[in-house]
Image (cartoon, rainbow, N blue to C red; front, side):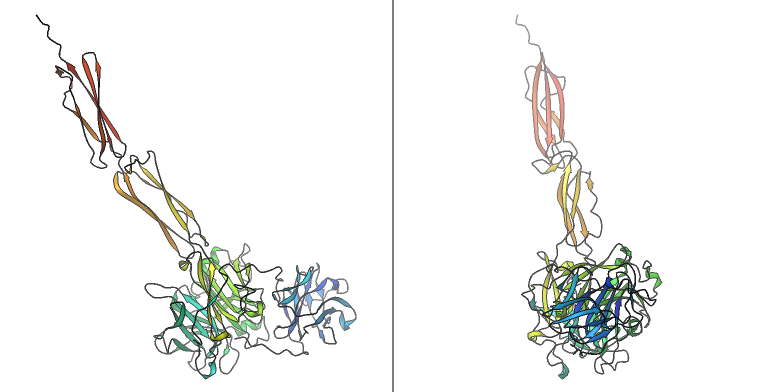
Length: 631
């Protein structure tokens, strides 16, 4: 759960910077004009409002003791030893800026103004230069410590509406959560082996895991699970409840355990940024089998981590994807799964609410050790959930109402780093409600129907008494078609008189194919009702097949004989021979006789045709007896 913080108008907080901040001084007087105000947060900053600077020049600039001022007398001094490298960003928390105010970047002692921006009304997001460092200021999506989000987000790539998908106050549990809010993480388990689809959810106020099943258009608690569809969660030791914020499953599904990201202990509010593994079992409670407390590692980046702004989202990304794309570690090395013993078959990605940064960790699944593999900025001021979609092989980062409900997709680029590939408005924006959605899940490709598949949202604020809402995401299934060719055309009777080659054509849907198109198949033998079936799959595991059936092939010509006359025999007059044919497979389509007189002989030709168009011809010659002369 995110609690809005009241921001004091004084007090300077610790700096946060992107890029390398060198400690060696460089001459500021020659290049300080290269430093520009790049982005301003004046209403929803954490822990205070902030001003981001950028070095647009080609040399490092020492800005020690330079100041940022508002339109009045509030002065915020940049710490000693602060140097911005070329192209790098530096962000200073500056207390509370006004709805109508001015941000000024000034030389030490406020001797002269180097850059400024004035606004008369608060931005919906932040005031950001577009493009970075050189453009004018626009109302944009917050992107603290990362490249500015310039230009409008793309429309949501799916249906334009979401609908309530739970009963009123479905998640109400106990006096501490009478309103039914604080549901954050979601994980979707597709139907399998006769088991219905399941939507899993975690609540942070009381550390609770819910199992929901579909009842018509509504998701309800599975009353056979735990206590009325819920189980209480505990840290290892079974005493302290976690503030569970995110939820994910690995490729092993529920059998591999539930993995939840936490911010703190639910009751004492003591900071405890951890990933927990819960192995399901009987009873009404689950105690974490393993805990990976990331506090020590995060402290190197975030000296002061707010207890309620820590690990918000978590998702699992398989090694198979990372290695296929040449993923690189934070140190620039090609990711080698063998370098991380006992980590399973993938990495866990967590999103930090306070900074919007995404971290990838290899967890030792036999203990509590972990290794940070990489990190990257999401471009959002806060990450509220992360979801890896196996089909499209995209990592989704979700921001809540702080960012207008926008989402972004990330993929590993040619350099081996996660880079943003999509940036989307919420469904129905701007007409739809901007909810505090902190959970997001996507149904697999197998649930694609009429070009759409379900998406799920968890509203942490329980707006109008409802938490779960369902939307849709565009999808399309792969297509596989079969065509037949033969040296002889198919007859009207449906038979081929020569071998038949079945050729397949493949078209990918919204997901890439996981393999090549099936090779052609040639049926060379004679036979009725022959068939060829092949299938293809996409990267989401959806399989489609195509069959060429009822293929009748007869390459054997019929037998034919001439009856009623014998070869070479002499007859007193012209005979009337008949044609007799047999065909054991396709059957005889016709048998014809022709006679041609050549002198005192007749040449008889019999031609038989079977239903596949094969023909057989035979001939014989008979004579006419000479007539006796009358005396």
